[in-house]
Image (cartoon, rainbow, N blue to C red; front, top):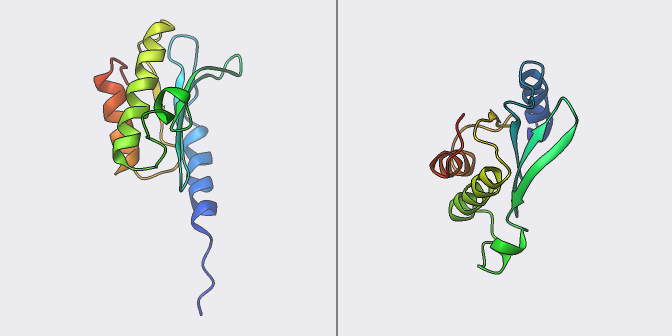
Length: 122
């Protein structure tokens, strides 16, 4: 049996490499995602102040009542749309996308595309 590193350890390494280069500012906050087995989370962060400006997830009350409590592409699209709507209400139009070491495919891509369609620019 081959001893391989855990998938999450490798993702954390990729994420730390990316985070050395990407940071959010007041003008362009960082759109960060986290993908678990059961849920998907997204938040817009101002790294200069260390503050989360807007967040959305499949656990949000707006989406939970519509039964988007699964983690699939349909739920990722709903989270991306909700996040974009909340960001526009907060006056945020441009963000820096931080995929957190995840491959830009599937649920991650669906969330990003929905956020773009909702009016966020990255």
